[in-house]
Length: 190
Image (cartoon, rainbow, N blue to C red; front, top):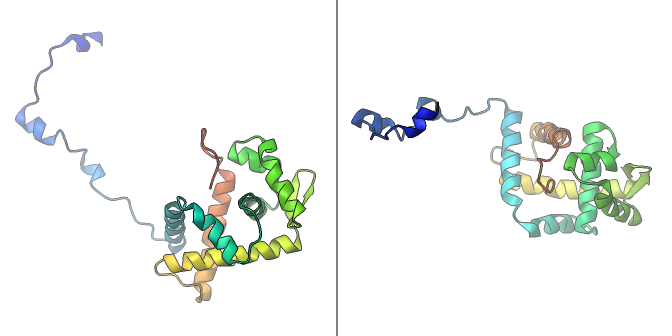
């Protein structure tokens, strides 16, 4: 094996040289497009959100346009509460911290603040949105859906079938976000 290190390097023959830059026929075929409309919508939502993820003003504008009065950290805690409750049936500060690979003590102030403005209740480590918190969340969710509606092709919020499709796609995405921990070294999800 080590003898290969000491062998003389020779130039490639003309036939081999012409194919040396080619990565192979298997890489020339594009990835298959999903045939399932929900899967296509999930991909479109993910792509749209990824592109928008760099726009920090958007994260303030949409909740404010929805009549929001929460800080960014309170809105984040409200979203995490809803996300985990939707995917798992309940939201637990420790579980949210594990998913994001963060100490619960780092996240606790955001949830405490959310409780102080009357949008959530903490029962031990379990956090629940209050009626006021759910109303606030519903307004923000509606604003985000309108934002998505304006950016997704072949989709409209006025079509009941499309709304059901969006609910299904968002539930699947939410479940994945909760079930798949943040990659090591990341700071969580935006």
